[in-house]
Amino acid sequence: MKTAIVTCIDANYVEAAAVFIESFSENYHTNKELDIICVMPDTDKEAFKWLSSTVSVNSRLNLKLRSVSSKSKYKWMHNAAVSERWQKSPAVWYRVVLGSILHEYDKAIYFDPDILIVENVQPILEYPMYGKLMAVPDVTGAVYMYGENRGEVAWFSTGVLIIDLNWWRGSGIEDVLKQDVISGGAKELVDEHFLNKHLKDVWYPIPFTFNFYAFKSDSHGMPDYDKTFLHPAFYSHAIVMHFAGPCKPWNYKELTTKTDKSRLGAEWRRRRDIILSREN
Image (cartoon, rainbow, N blue to C red; front, side, top):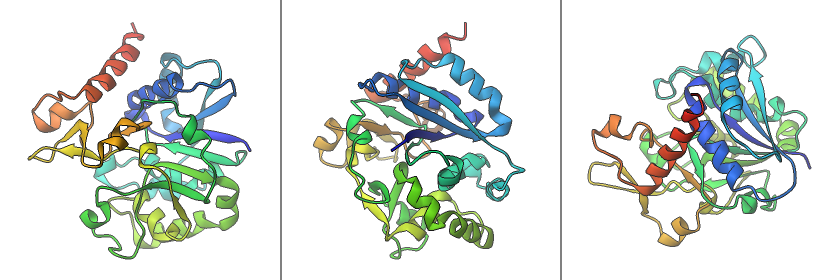
């Protein structure tokens, strides 16, 4: 089974992707070769050149670009990328068409770029395919915050997805999602809303530690990346730390006017600064 590690980004997220990729590389401990694919708009190829020349990965990992043209059959995604929350980027849609984009692969393990890998990733890579689409259950109540199909979907987070691409291609789900987007218009949660709406009967849950984003918030709603509102055991065994939501380690002070004092946030910024220092 040919597997790809995938992240979907545009030029605005290459720094975040660099941190994710390097942390993945440092926590990849087998001799098997593996492809890491960045799915990007074809207009952002220069950003990938920066990423590939700056990021440091071990020789077993092959960093590759898969570009998507706005003039191709994926034009509908570019037209639907209207949400200001995602800076009108079509990249947020790409994970819903990975089956056709990654036509030569059997399996995809998708990661959002705002992720830091902190432990050996092998448990995720070797997790049995109990289902055709596997993801961590939502723990933040996003379905209630945004009110889409409340009570009608089994909500899961799309930050980390394990996908059987052969099933995906054979199911015709991309055409279903496309028609829904075209007829219904873009939503605030875009891909998360549509994947939950159409794949509730297919989704199989995986451990919280594979996509940990249940950070405890202060009285102002700002996350403390060193604390969790779940049982601390989940935090201590987490493989993926996912900075989900609008507040990130790189914009924390900009949004809150406060300094992020968490060790986890400091570790993300330390890694980012090392990567940026290679430009000089």
